[in-house]
Length: 527
Image (tube, rainbow, N blue to C red):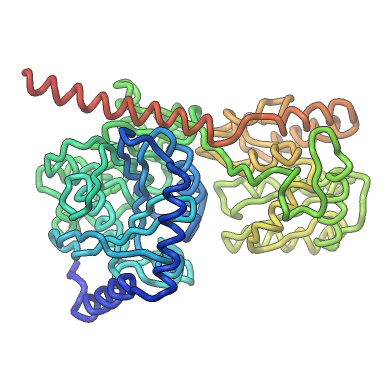
């Protein structure tokens, strides 16, 4: 693929110039960030240095759960590690990066263009590096697709550039006054960095977290030269005749991690291994595949969440009923004494929403109501709309997503329907539990690790309408036993799901990954 033209270079220079601006607004913002840095004292002077590389971060831009993880996990680690974030300079990032200044540069490599690196400190002091190349990144739309939902045709070049930049920072070749001792890479857009480290001989270890194995970053094999992949390494990236960025990460990273213990086990088998199961099984056998369940933001708290109509707690339930009434009014459903079921999800095949559509008539016939919040694949959206038209007193939907509405639905609902065919971790079930809404979920991936069947929710064994229907029947029977329902709600709300535990486990994994690489290096030196 050809390098960006001169117009692209001019736009990059203009972007960098804007970030260098010394306007009073930027000076004031920078001063506030510096004062915040002094006040927070986030990490010890001898803390290990780690670079968290991500293609999205909810501080700036979010397309999925990775964006929330990228905002929360580096912050959860800061009392143990000197963690900094690297993210591409998308248009949305540049608009929010108040006070950013250019601090480094990445030289061109193969057909990967040169880039500059800016640094901004978030209000809490978290340092974020921004990879600047307007021709590659400063566009409308999501990080991965256009506003029309079509993948950018140069995604291979865009995310190889991000990966190469991360490796160059680790090698100390970016002109920064800081270099990491570990790269934490996330999903396929960053995975190629593990290869670039290995091919350049950089001794910095890498940890790859797989948030969803189904997305692998597959591109034409003919692009290998343009991306700077050495001839000797191309077989390692070959996935049935195509280049797989994610496979590169699995092959070359020192440690591979997933977002739940159960998902780490499941992806070593053919059913959920997406063609990479044998490779992952070998990593597991070598002790280099692990799973850590994500946490959720502490703002999901019914006692303090300002999005709710009224607060409530494990000791005071009346507020939950008020929120339920508000949700019914907002979705134009009649008030009811029956249970309120929620679906807060992308409307895609993976999430099993066709199963909900199949079971909805039974829920309506039993006196229940269902509220959908989400958007996605057109056929599923149409099925949900048809369901609303058929059962206007029992089913309502918001085709789209708004966080405030989603939080109110969690808070007002009695049960969350989550029949995902596969689910690496899942956050919705933990949000629902925090608000006393009991998940009804397929026993897969992170749902197994976060829903205690019959205690904090309900699990069913196979992703079928009949299995979901039987599980919904269990929920109705629980609904008719107020003492049991209250006990389960209380257990769900008190289930630990913050980032403290996940952060501690990641800190241990960082240390183990770094130590393993250091020991291997010493062994080679001795040999």
